[in-house]
Length: 551
Image (cartoon, rainbow, N blue to C red; front, top):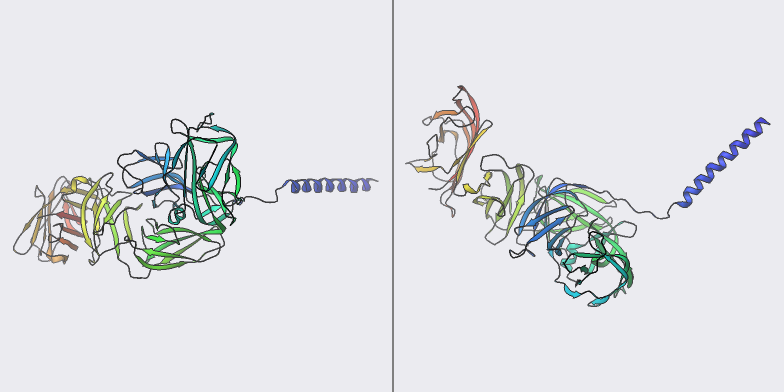
């Protein structure tokens, strides 16, 4: 009897467990939202807003929780906690959005994005129904709120539509279906429906809905841009539908998609800020590390066109697609390009390395671009239209140093630039061990067979046995220093007359005063036998410097 009771107890427990399992299964959904990786990080972005910028308006840039004033057509901004895959860049004139961009933002990098000017909207007094060309809309039993969720009636409607493929492809080539699955989108039309109150502040729908009626015989999908999540989210595939979404809409064909991330390199060195084009999009630009991200149909190859800054096609590359959310690769560019090697560091007015330097390259064709780097010692390739160009450290919106003319035919590295505005007429920089000093422009004196460079107090004399561009051997370079104010101890060396030189093993005269800029520029480096002044000690000390001056 006791044994029978145990069997009965076991049967009851199994029944309860089975019932519990069945109950959990029955309550589960038959479809679930796909969860993709959300990568948020701090990063940098160079914003090109030339399509919307004007000196007459006070424009604001917003990305997530980041806001800043736009003060120039190209501007570099630091961003905190932004999405890699779903960022939205907005340019506001007061409270109205006049420009948009949907860039991929690589973490811990300097990214580049051009703002698309939105179609000029028609401004209407608010009415419960209306149309945007062939699109009809009507508000059904609506209740409206402002940004603080207070009940608020709209005063004005802003509506617009565009079928410009270059514009709409740049804003939308990937989105998410009703299950949250990544989709590749071939958009065909963009339209806007925005509401504002009497103070030009945005108003949204709290209750009721917006009904949209449009021509959708092809059964295309309609997406709405969720500003908060940064995603183009599926709304409908019908000719008539209801939604509470207010803002920006996109219509197009969709299919399962994936993202392809690749790093563009030449000889294993990043090809930074490289313009590439994918199908009908406006050109995208790679990051400072040469990284680029494109959307593509699932498991399909996609082709990128490599452009120079003059929008001339230079070569094509193919990227292998994948069947995962994102596929990564490295793409080597082997075709001959006009590329300049930027192996340089940028100094401030005190001679300190700029941790996140910016440089601007300008060409006679009129093309120019700002580039930024998160490494103080930059080592990248950048594409140019021509062999000759101008390079300047810094940004026009903040501070820029002297502009230097350069040529791709030259073998030398650029090495050192300054973003110090007071150095625009020239400067000299000398580093001994870990001590450094910036001097005002040196005086240059031409002797019978050499160029002699001296500071205004003649604490430094640097002499090169020659007058022309090129590299000079150790025995043709001489240096003398007696500067008690250099570093904590001062430095001294007398090496004017040595037939064997002074230990300067690298000396490159990149500019000899005969170019358009009339610069004379000498870069030098080596190990020089010298002494500290107080207290006195001697040894071979590593020396590096740059002299930029004019006759």
